[in-house]
Length: 232
Image 1 (cartoon, rainbow, N blue to C red):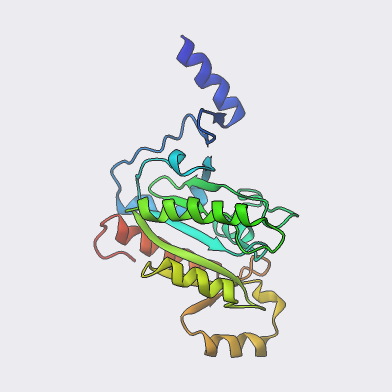
Image 2: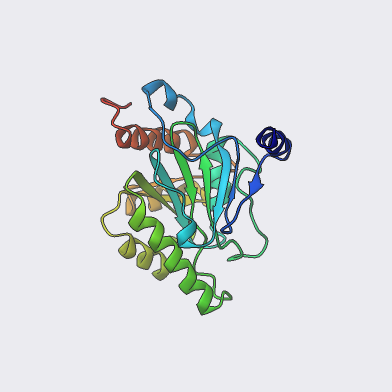
């Protein structure tokens, strides 16, 4: 009876807190399950928040394939995630860059979306930046089901020294360079940027430029990581 009462309460609240500093949805567990091709149809529209983790020891056990998002503070990472999921407030944006210091996990049913904390904001103390490196480093070392990483950059200021440092740190991990806020550029500027970075994707959460292309690519990554033959 006690379990039923707790479950009913969590359903009304949407999520619950548990020891260790992470928040987890009681009725969307982090355990893996059998995955089929049909599970990937419009997978990002199924996104639901499941946990926010602030310490390496609280990282959830590996489960279904994951795609992670990384990027400097205030480059539009949360807006990109919301656009892919077709939501307005799935990932929350902050008016104070560098404030988010947790790894946020989202359940996609057959996979997970992982939002890594923003980095590189000058006003963040060195201790906080060191904590970010420790936390994200622990995540990257422990995630065997990681299908790839989306590195979000401001299209007006791509590949800053901090971006290059992150790419070097990520090593051989599969990645997509996502140039956000493309609507801030003229067509001529977009064309020039596209020639300079042919492997990058111009993206705008305002005009929805690049949203479907990004979804299709990430879905194919997740299917490959899940062992689906001949992913679309």
